[in-house]
Amino acid sequence: MESELKCIRVERALPTGAPEQSCVRLTLGGSKGNILTRAAMAELRPVLASIKADRDVKAVVLMGDGKHFSFGASVEEHKREHAAGMIHDFHELILDVANLSIPVLSLVSGYCLGGAMELVLATNLIFEDETAVFGQPEINLGVFPPPASLLLPLKVGYARAEEVLMSGENITAVRASELGFVNKLFSTAEALREGADAWITTHLLPKSASSLRMAVQAERAVFAETLARHLPRLERLYADDLMTTHDANEGIEAFLEKRKPNWTNQ
Image (cartoon, rainbow, N blue to C red; front, side, top):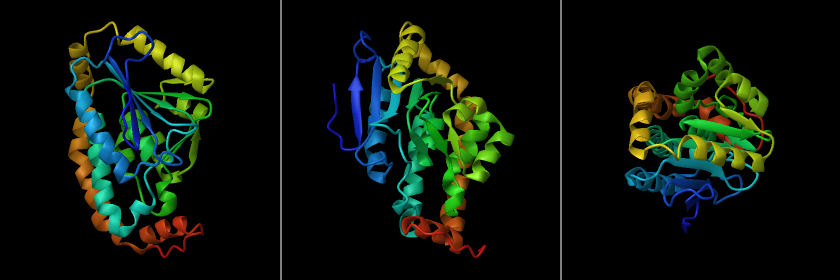
């Protein structure tokens, strides 16, 4: 079954031979680079709610259309007049994924940057191929990534997370595997899909869907509580404090205008 949504494609009954409704594949699309616009978020959240209400689903696969997973959230929607609404909607999406209580596997090919990397960090498992490039480049634009500021330390520890968040540098597939937030590395996109299907078939499909849900809730207790407790505070820091500074707005405008930012340190 396939949806007619503009930004998200929904497919059921995979991998091949899987029982009807046991797996769902969500494919990000709708634009060049599969940008996570507010429209895309608005489409994805009801889909996740529908999946959560389906007691037979044992696995969700999240991937991007084409060569790349996603270039991240819309930079245009980071502008001051849109930032508060955008960041709130995005945080609600992150909380939805973190609290889905169904195993979610992210399959990453190509670029997975900014908000896309944060979305992937909120999932349970991350599989990649050798073309994958991750990054939290927000600091280069004069802003910071609230979900990644919480999620990345939980995934890889503070020492490694702070280096990624402060540098804003891209992370190759091999480096991502070394850092430890990626679970499996495959050679090609085809091998990635086949490997994910095989993993789901071996490790998830034979199990009880209800037991899997409770197991995911248990293993994510601290993870989910950390997000619920601290993400609203970081949202206020971003929307109420950061976006009133010159440099945050200058960084966004400079990126959109394809020029170097003129920092005033204010």
